[in-house]
Image (tube, rainbow, N blue to C red; front, top):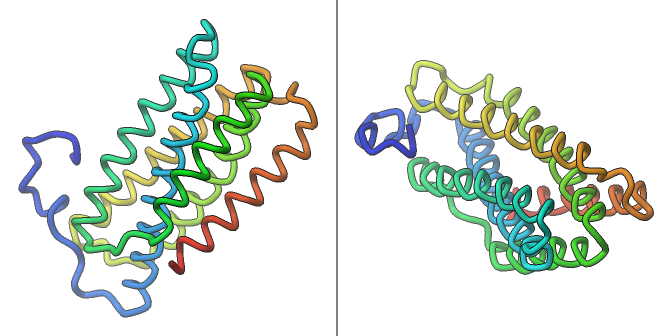
Length: 199
């Protein structure tokens, strides 16, 4: 719906619920602010990985394919942000720098470490999208944007979990100090989520 010009004037992609409580509006604002920031960071993680591993015949195309999906996610999140009049996080530039740094550093550690980074990030994001879907149950389903928003979050969650599977299939768990690396990246993602909710 968000990438098809034929639906450009559909109320589901152009309007936002008005009959929601202040608490529901705050939850919607927080969710979409975090999601948009997360997609910014994801794009820069893959950009950093591709900068290092782009010429690798196996890893390069895999990273590019995942990055292409993240570009679509960001395009849609930018449109959702405008539709629902959400203030973007003030940490967008930090997300870009941190994302690129994380992607490049883990790629410099090797293909397996790059995949371990993807595995850890997508594990947290998959769980985060699941939590959001539960929270969105409280939104009024009579507004056309709400079922569509839930469909988008569900689709993006499934894409992220597919990236997680791709990382595992490509030996993420063979990365040096896999458990420590995964734990550090996962904790970093959770902290970033909480910061973007507030700022």
